[in-house]
Image 1: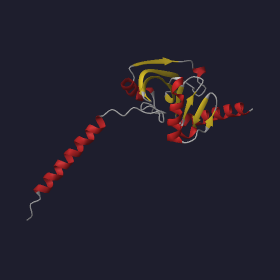
Image 2: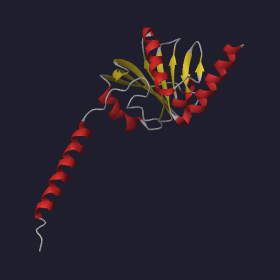
Image 3: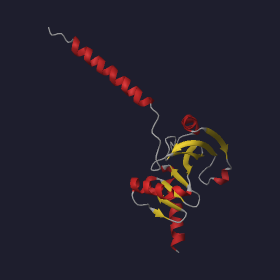
Image 4: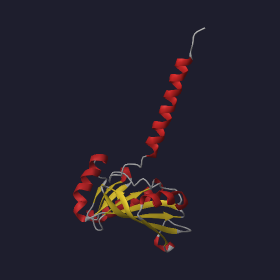
Length: 179
């Protein structure tokens, strides 16, 4: 009878090593997001209860505010904003606003500096191609559900469930600027 103990021992060592390496890799904090994708805490459609631990970990300070329902046309029951300070995004600590409609994350605003606009736009174009809308107030990449605002320097990220609203908004702006 053949002795399979060395093979079993090697397989056990390999399984333990794989488990340890996987645990170490998952324990590492995620790399800071560049402008081409939403912050890691932006789980669109998720509730504040689900996202709150992610925000607590990502923000140096966090304030939750209930806002008037009438200021959020897509909300029926609640309009809540999580104001995040110190979010590591697009190469710098930033202020961000995570906006919830009816306890589902709808969109995120990440404040930027006006002087960053060209670099941010170049990063967005490299990742997503030509913008769907290139307008004075904003450059939109609806194919990636994001925009770079110019009138107020900030990045906008939004979920699939509100994408039709934003696409309509960008289309409406495009028709106004075409006249």
